[in-house]
Every structure is written in structure tokens, then in C-alpha cells.
Image (tube, rainbow, N blue to C red; front, top):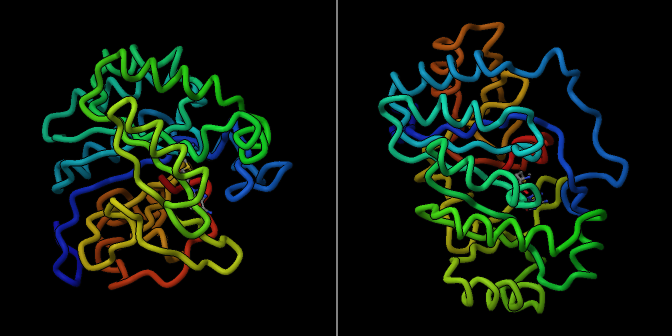
Length: 265
Ligand code: SAM
């Protein structure tokens, strides 16, 4: 499928929850965000139907994100359902790795191909400060479990202030190099002003080649992470919402959406 600027749209990112087990200082307020009532969160059967229709319309790449996708109960079941859909060539997840010691092998066995793992520092004290409640050792154990499980690709996402030459970023680069894991550096966006940058070493933020649609955990399709435009799948119906999102996808983003913490990744 193509948008109105002739970009081929073949990538669906699905946020399965707005909940998270960390409180990264650049992403969420210390006391969390106002949560979507559970009754409004898409059920697995709805996510599967939306994904199936999107794949029939031309999506070949799917990524699961959040919030933190591994805090969604029975996430492995959803991964298995999506992995079994014909037409998906590339199936990934973005996670903070904290729960990967438990989930890496079941996710791999369920058919997930790739993992992007967020890691902003390898200093335990800095990790505690940045995430407000996380332990670096848990994330590292999760990364090691992912490597042991045998994923096709594991990339590290590292948020930087301005440059990949900062000391936290250099530490993550060295950690990645030791394990043979590529690192992408994401410049910290200001969620108050919406200012955003392209991802160093990745595709994020390159509007001219953007191939993505995003589904929020309460069923809204966002054609662009840097715009608040969205189309409600439950109100419009799945196909109409997809068509509206294609038609409405802006040529370029202008400010990071307020929903970034529940939709990004
Ligand atoms: N919980 C998962 C994780 O940590 O990877 C997925 C969701 S998280 C919102 C997705 C990505 O967004 C992470 O890589 C995180 O670092 C990034 N992110 C969140 N807030 C950001 C900000 N203000 N600027 C840049 N990246 C941000």
C-alpha cells in the first residue's frame, strides 16, 4: 500500500500496552502517566485481526512495542499468533530487557525474529538514576538471555543527550562491541516541545522514506510518530482506519506526539 506521497507503507508497529516496569526520566514522569483504562486496551483477538488485515493490505514488517511489551500478560501467545501469519517477513520487538531472562527463549520459540533493546548506560548507578527503579544487572541478564536464545538480530537503542561520544554512550558502544551487538543512538527528544531528530545508525525520523503506521494499545492508528494525527480503528473499522491513516500520513513530522512514551520504539 502507498500513502499520498507515494511512499510504500509496509511496516506496522503495535503498542500492546501503555504500562511500563521502568520510569526512564526522559520518557515518563516519576509517578507514571495517566493509564488507559484496562477495558479500552485492545484484546489480543482485536490486535490479531488488525494485523491480519494490515498484512493482507501489504504490511510485511511488524514490531511489538509499548510501554513495555513484556509486562502485557500472555504476550508470548500474541507473538505466536502473529508469527504464524503468512506474509510477515520481519517480526521484531522493542523492550527494555528487564523481563527477558524469563521471556527470551519462549519469544524465540514462538517465532519472533528480532529484538531492539533499550540500554542508555552500563554504569549501575547511572542506570538506577536514568530508569528511576531499574537494575542494570537485570537488563544485562536479559540481553545475555536474548543472545543465548539465538535471535536473528539484536540491536541496542541508546538515548543520548547530543552525541554518541558522551561517556554513557561510549560505555554502551563498548558493551555492544564486546557482544557483537550493533548500537543505534537516539538523540533525546524534548517531549514538552516535541523537538525530534533522526536516529543515528537507524531509519527513525527519516520522513522521506518512512514506511510505518503505528497502532496504539487502545486502537488508534498513528500515521506519524511526530504528529498527533490518529484514526480510531474501533470507530472507523479496520480497513477504513488504515486507508484514512495512509491518506493522512504527513509528508514530514513536525513535533513528537504526546503519546510518544506509550507508542515509541
Ligand atoms: N519499553 C520499551 C523499551 O524500553 O524499549 C519500548 C517502549 S520505549 C517508549 C521505546 C523507545 O523510546 C526506547 O528506546 C526509549 O529509549 C525511547 N524513548 C522514550 N522517550 C524518549 C525520548 N524522550 N527521546 C528519545 N527516545 C525516547
